[in-house]
Length: 450
Image (cartoon, rainbow, N blue to C red):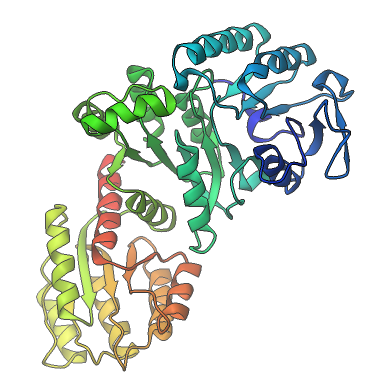
């Protein structure tokens, strides 16, 4: 396992390509790096100062040691900069610049020279052709992403930098936190497997997300991802699954997409959770980070019959176990619910359900031994007390901490405070029952794998 401390926890950083030019990648990197706590050195032979700070003509002019160099210069100048980084004994470099293997023969030759130089000098290289890395838990943003997301327990490793940008934007308003975000681009030196091995040992990371277009060494990826997935869940979104998508991959990061059937079979065998959409990737990540595993059957509680039926349909399609209610459970439910309620799974406590009705019903379901978790649905009706119900759900989850509870409540003006309360207490809420079922499926799959 390679030592990546200088990548993810550097004390000193040199930015080669720092600039005052508005709208440039170099200025974006300046802003992001200044938001951290590391000591910074700006390198630009053509500007004496950047953001009022003295610049250096070369990394060789910096008297102090440099842990990490971030390089954002034209591709034609990258090799000479890397050579100087080697002379300076810089430990790790991030090459943001594009213009390498992804552009064809000229770029491939340039990338081969870069790899040779990196190996000669003993450098760790991230990229080239990447967004960079963000480590919120270490107050590090060595990228040109639009913002730094909040700190959390989710790591996201992506071949696409632009996709990371979109996820970061969404995270700012969705209570989703990250330990680490890695855009690795062309993967010329450090590989996806190196990042997985780092995250396996990272105490700040609980769940690992992958966006993949292809892998360079299928056997190594399978062996390492299988090893890591024994202790930390890995959720993967694979692109390039169709014939045209496969062709698009090669022009993006110079990767080979390969047969989707082979990939999906390998994911399953390695214990990875495969998802179909970016939204599902984020939904499942939140559920895995916040909730315990689903080790028994699924119960559904709703105040709207139609939503309950939809949820059961989705659950059956996903192969989730849906236990019938025991006679003891039915007897307890009949004692506190109106005769118009449905005393089967899904439990419909009907549209005029009060907070008290939610409390009693949810506790009764959680007490049934073969119900391992509950999807609780609130449709917003005139008597629905979303915020009060949220507090009830949070209290009952403390009482039954080993059983996952996932909420379905379409977030709008009337439900906003209640949903915010749920998620503040690490109870994930989704706008659609299918999202909730996908999360419960992931919690169930992981329970069987572990």
